[in-house]
Image: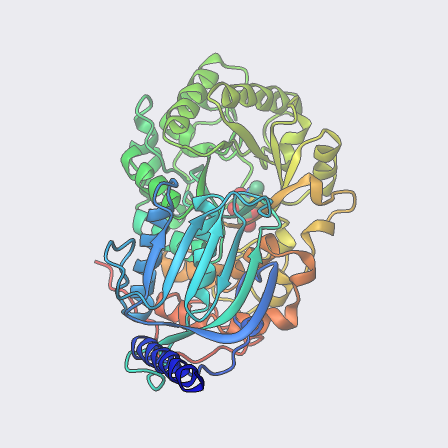
Length: 539
Ligand code: TNX
């Protein structure tokens, strides 16, 4: 009896040992180094990070799976695979049917969990075998994918196993944006920027979870979007820019290409036609629109405030109806920006009359009107949004009227302000904005009486009077734009300059690999990387 028990035990032990050996044969136990997920260089900083101190070894056998029937999820998986290839050269299969070789997986899962307070929220659970990204929508999954990209190290560890492994710290991340509108504006009117330039800007914005790109499409010096019913706008109005350069414009197809590219990155394009001031290029093309009593001429200087539409002419509103209709038809986002700033030669009562009428046209085409803070004086209802840039009284009035506010204070958030007196490009009418000044302010408390619930979000405008190519654009936009991403995504308790500046310095490898000529502010200890900026030859 005793013997038989012993025998049985021996058999069980042998089988068990064999099984374990078999398992180990299949899956080698790797001694991962101790990690700390909280010490990673995320920008913007996620809401909650809980480290578990081991590592997920991203290698060539990792497979990406996604919920397959949830809209947009497989595409987000493809996007991640493409970016992992760019970063590591690994070619990871997405939703492969043969999964026998998968030792580690990244699973992008649609989840209706009530824990996600917005459509952009997501949760990441990283263990030694899997990275599970849960999100309610593809948009949330896309934001989570940026977080994964940010924690893939620059170099692989080649000693732990026979395959190269990029070690990702394990733990949990729960994340959700602080503001729903997190934007940048690009002025393509003062100087024109090509579709390729705009796409590169979108690539970088998306990496930092920005979700709005506002395009300033018309100003005194140029009209940049084809309007089929008014062809001279681009023929004449598109032919000039500041300093006398060749200008340019987007055909409707090119604009749609930008919109689609932005949509793939879950970025909404906000088109702006600035009016009734800043309209010289439109009036040169069609002098009947002009209301300043002078003969319009092509303008390549940088003064503001001299132009206006004739606000009492029916033709002007027929024109605006066509422009808003054509642009709205090719803009899937909910907003149309109608400008409204610095209309110094429009009488106040005419301005009020004009903005109220334009608001109705914008609504007729299914969009919400955004305007610079001056629009608050018009008779508009609470669906309009005021973009605060200079006048606090206007912003307060907007809040009293029940409008939401986009914060773009010139002194803090204007990307075209110089860093200091030595800056190569930029203006300084609102002051100098070194990298710390641009980051150290609290949108939630910037204007007394304007609280979190009144604020739709933060936008950093890049006006282009002093910049005419990508290198110059990058000099002003980066690194400051990265700080605005944190100011708009991360909650106040998670924002801290001393902590941020270290994470910012560690963005250098990404920016270098993206060939971004950022301003190497001396306030930041920039991490050395193996990539250096390459000048791109333009013909
Ligand atoms: C003010 S901000 C402007 C722009 C200029 C910018 C230069 C705003 C609504 N108007 O027309 O380009 O300053 O910083």
